[in-house]
Length: 265
Image (cartoon, rainbow, N blue to C red):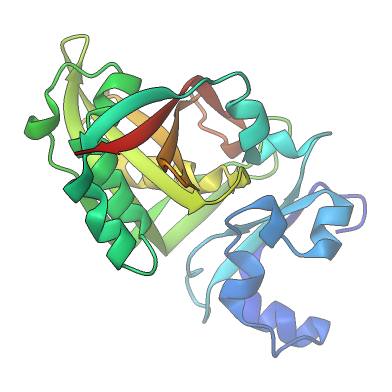
């Protein structure tokens, strides 16, 4: 990258061959979930990688690189900062409702989103008017095209995510303040706080916006689920873009809360 703040999009397979590491898997290199997943070389250089679909006329998934402007907060939500000071509110649920999570070896993000909806955690956290049993949570995985802008201070970076794969852990429609709103959920489960790449929320939001009438509110939701001996700890924050250009770095957490789902007889 030299002194530039970006590396323009190009197919990863071609770049890897030219750079001499053709054996590296594309997904391992450019599908970053958290700061811990970012390659040490990029992390040390303050550079984030963005997956950008398939560039017309090329083969394989393309990617772009962009530097942060002083902090990793540009491109990641850091759990310890986002949920600082959140004291868990107990939420009681039937013990049989949690039984399946003891049976299954590993809970999927989607199943925990469904639990957060059914238990009323998300309706409370997001101040939704609709009742929990009126909400239908959906998941999706498909290819979408939209514009990707990493940072407002990097004007030259305005890229096209072209028919790239996007996974949506949860999405539902509910009324808030009398307005029909689309909520898009990105969930992660772990035993301790970590971080989340902002594009994991931004990409599903941008993808869904392409199918909606202009002006329809789309709210991003980051759900961090911690496994606890006494149950599941649900940490929820609402996310939105802080300007109309919808740069990845402009995605911010605007409200956060914590809830402990406790089984009762």
